[in-house]
Length: 102
Image (cartoon, rainbow, N blue to C red; front, side):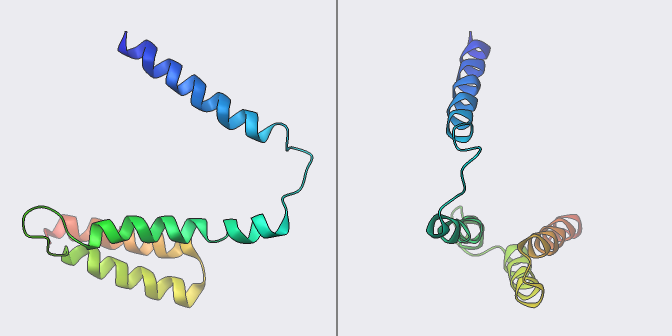
């Protein structure tokens, strides 16, 4: 029964997304919408990083691995201008820190 609910939810979600994309296939996006959408990815990344860097649990202290990775990702994005490069550098540092035990 649970799998039927999951499948129905997935089908509805897919249907909603397709219903918004199909009618607009031959139209162009308004310039003001396009400008507004350029800020969505950095805002989502910043929100995700803020929750990780702020710390969790009883100590509420920032995780040093996430602080280092966030700083390195920030420098990378500022130097290259590419968000994907910053994500790759930041995730690499987090993974290496996990392997080392930081």
